[in-house]
Amino acid sequence: MSYDFIFLLEEPSIKIVLDEILPKLIPDHVHYICIAHQGKQDLAKSIPKKIKAFQSKPATKFVILHDQDSHNCKILKDKLLAICQESGKSDVSIRIICHELESWFLGDLAAVEKAYALKNQSLSKKQDPRKFRDPDQLNSAKQELKKLVSEYYPATHAKAIAPYLSLADNKSHSFQVFLAGIRKLVNDKR
Image (cartoon, rainbow, N blue to C red; front, side, top):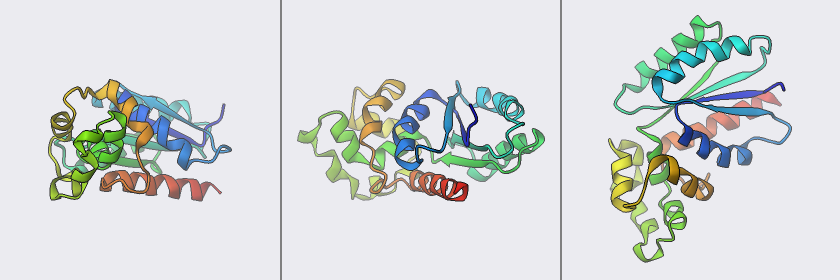
């Protein structure tokens, strides 16, 4: 099969989220695949192989999605772009999740509340205080989410939260930048 978009992802939990949100953004006639990796090193090693594997399809667009963690965002993006350029592909869309995937979840506490049926705790009402108004600024979103939902475990619970994520109301700036980037790529395909 020929793909319009190939998403190269740092980890399986990101794939779980994209499997939920991409069908809402990408029309049925546009074909894509999400390829999850087992961490940063696995992704970095895989990029040249994937680019070479799809070399015969120059119209295919690659999207790389990577957690920022403690890296400098610009340096990380430049490093990933350099890997792509050395592999013969420079028109790659690189999106960095600030700081980690859980920032996207904290950007939509209503989704977390629904996923865990936590109406008694009113998580969605905590969205407006400063701490969760800009979740990308939190250094450890994973720990913050664990404080709110003690049973939270990344890979397993991404499945619980992802179906409820709002594309319109999420407070995570990196989530909104990712969505805008995908919409632009889809519009450019038309």
